[in-house]
Image (cartoon, rainbow, N blue to C red; front, side, top):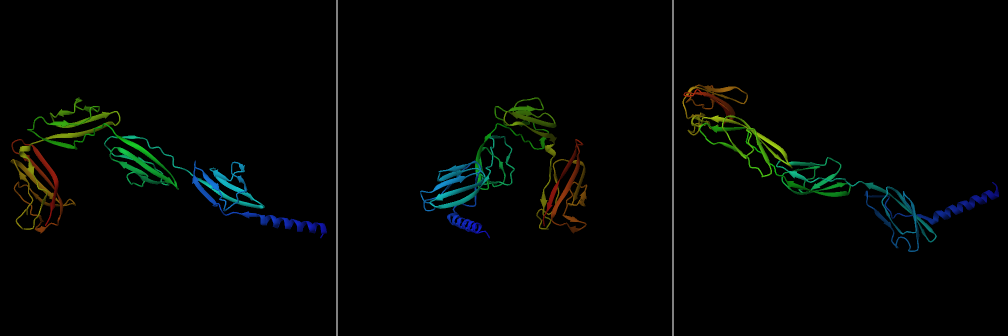
Length: 333
């Protein structure tokens, strides 16, 4: 080998070993730093780690910064610091990752009587509502101030919203209303705030109406914040003087107490039929004797404890009005 070339390689190896001994990697920064997007993180070293006279060279994903001993970082990517401490060159780095903060703004709303469901619909977040609920939605059943804390891998935001009480009326009369034939001045009424408007199918706009005949009655309530609510009811007349009293249970255990099932009538009937069936529709008792009584047996054998279905058909003597009653009877032994 050429002597000059040999001397060159010897000197090159010596310089490399010298530089290697002078450049020391630091282990003071985490390999990865995670912060929330929009926040910043301070990188710095104490005098116990690096001498006071050291100079710094920072390399970030955006720029190169010199002559500062500490640095706030906020951009995603690799951040490298070179510290010249006397004859030593110290190098360290950290990779900055950003987690997004949840973006949310729940609007204030109005409670109009029906439950409100506030839903965020992001299963990857963690939630803590002011009522202790931890799912991605909350059921609100009364006015008030509500809040939710939403956490995305340590990045959390809190949003507060108001649920005000809106002037609303939700009528509820039930599906059917039975009125005695001799009952006078029967009314349907709705209690509504002064700024809620009412519209009845009779043409009235008042808070109550008189019922003059059988039929379907409905009312709409309208308010600025809660919109329109509607309810209806079917009104039927009945002869209260000829009502049928039907028990809902009996105990055929031969103790002389409530051993038979039978209806009690207030009027005379020209026709009568009662049919009792089990839950599968099998007839276990039938009679056209208005004073007949079921003893809880079928063909002489005791029927099991269960709920049975009855149907009564009858025609009043004087008015020839047909009466039908359907219902359930519980048998207990």
